[in-house]
Image (cartoon, rainbow, N blue to C red; front, side):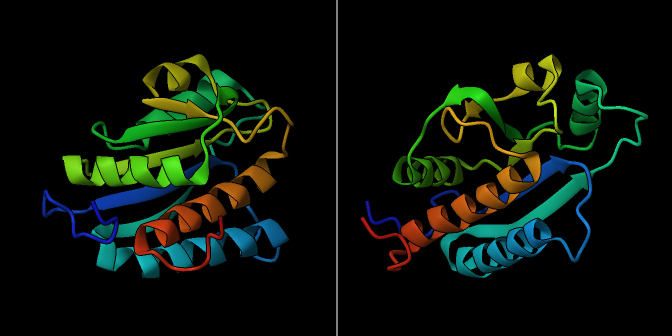
Length: 170
């Protein structure tokens, strides 16, 4: 199968990068995240991706609370969305297999895939249970703001692999 083939289902897939907390527009992590997602959105449309968006959730809690943050995540997501939790205990998946997984979901007719970045203390149990897949950026611990930018770059990388562009060099 050529990864550039149009979707078999004909409907398209939305990708959402959802994160707890709001970044300020002048923060480097915000600028990086927005840039990668803009590129992903432009590159993905010819490949059967309906859109790539950034959803910031700010539950306005006096202090971090993973369970309340998980409830805010789940309340703001489409019930049919596939959730991919980014968590330190998740599986490692390379960029090429992640791209292939997106193609599989697109071709299966899934409407939305949400990559979920937790707050400073990670995800609550309810979100981890609701997740279709849990992935990790390796055994190192990353700041949640930087994890958001890294997830945005991986979304763009996966789409560039799908498109067959030279961005991803093996």
